[in-house]
Length: 360
Ligand SMILES: *Cc1c(COP(=O)(O)O)cnc(C)c1O
Image 1 (cartoon, helix red, strand yellow):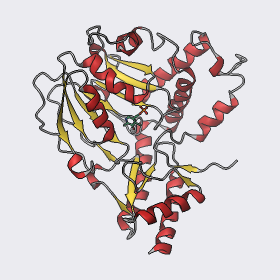
Image 2 (cartoon, helix red, strand yellow):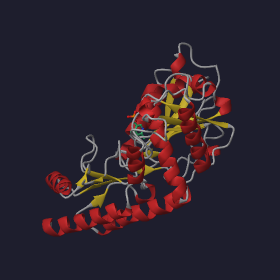
Image 3 (cartoon, protein in one colour):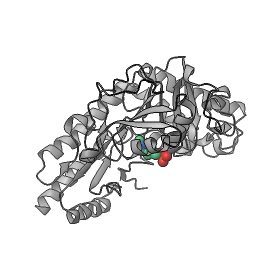
Image 4 (cartoon, helix red, strand yellow):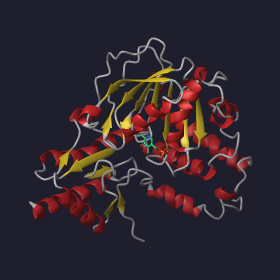
């Protein structure tokens, strides 16, 4: 068996111990004589799995009782529509556009009402986070929307915007569980789990209870109402059962590690290995403003498309895979999520150093 160092932006690396546990339980989940994949979601065994997953997530993030935790499907992209359908009571919302995912969410919201871009970093190809301390928030905005960690460009909101009392809605797909968060600062946060938590197919939404109402936009399908899922414990219909089971294992892995404080410290140290190298390198350069750097997604370039391509190819042959930058931005991107061991980043940096010596 040869495992590679997988720097994919998503679906992405998972903790090896989680995969091993899942493998051990594949044919017979704890004496049930079946795989979790084959199990009724109405069974006692499965109810225990989803209950434990929710309890562990609540413990990890310190989610107050006044927030619901929903396990949904449709990818993070489906939330781009579900958020306005459920929350745009006045049909007005303010969006902060810091990358492609925020832009897609903003454009989708325009299908439902007046979606204002109150700030943007498009002027410098999304290489920074704009100052959001005093934005022209609309008087009747139903919410203010951000993409907290910009997976493609590698920037992160280190200070949440001043929403002037409006609920903050955040797409946290690529920074979910990478650090402690104060959930009470958000009206809602959500993310697809395939970046930092589990297999594609599950979206976790954490929503303040008072925002979950029957007062949704006319025509909102039953399946796209938060209330439907909140009232039914995420089991209105068949949930993405196996995916939730793996998420639960990752929550346990995080708890056993010491929780999100410990995870953040590890992530800071791990990212520093790569950023320090980039700052000292005469060949490789980071592409975003230092103060806004993501701990999870690290884009970099050599300045030459040919060298970039050569690097990606040679890195792959050496066991460092999925380093090619997003198809829309080029260059390289190393996604170094929770489950990427520090050793993987150290070895990548050693490889980059050798490549630099050979190619300058
Ligand atoms: C990957 C990603 C998405 C899209 O997720 P899907 O599950 O493919 O819809 C949205 N937002 C962010 C921040 C992402 O990283």
